[in-house]
Image (tube, rainbow, N blue to C red; front, side):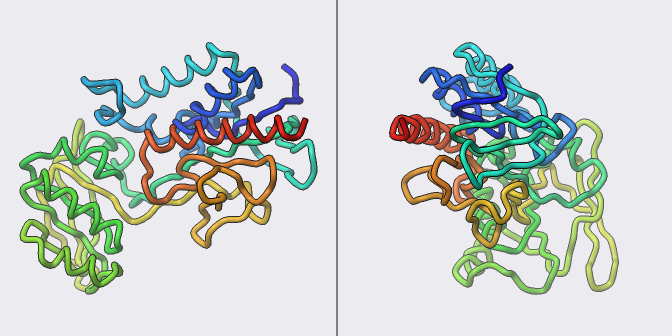
Length: 314
């Protein structure tokens, strides 16, 4: 395998693998460094590998399992000539061309880089939490709300995202408990009022989820009062964690421009970063939509941007 490439793609979720499909079809022979299976922040295949049934990805009217969908992405990218390495990038140097990427001691060079390292949902760090993702525990109301029609569920968080998720979930659930650690919401005033005015939302103030129950699927949670430490059961079949997301951008600190929250900044209407020849796509630069289909779309954009940029250099 040559260590000198026209394009290296870092990340292998919907954004990275779509970029791989497009750059491979453009005869750019991309190398995809997809991450390590043991790493929660660099999971090969992205967050869809932790998802059960995906019902909102176009082209699959009966739905498809998340890992199967990403397997299809991977097979399609390889079919057109993309090479994949199941390793984690440990260091980058974008200060001069060709750009340099290391996997431990092995150095790779590229004329252009597409960053598609994604983001991870902040979790509660409770036992059973990861095992029950996709089986009652979720981090995406848009993805999973449909499965909780007529059920009682809980949303954890007090910011705009949590209220947005809770409000959306009232379209399906019979009742939504909003679990808030303090005696006030962090959300904007208009969002707070939206929650207070919704008859299906009950706010549990000064509360936190301290235990998650269930073997094959979520059967309930334990709520602890943050003031008195008293506990009580909450019989819900769904738990949506909405305490924020963390983009996987640690590799690029002081190298690529990013927001205070860590999301990479791209030029409006494109995937160009502040370094010519470096492009970013998917959840690593999108904190608004965070859907597989939008990530795939931006991966397509990054591939086309990279192809055109490479043409302009030659």
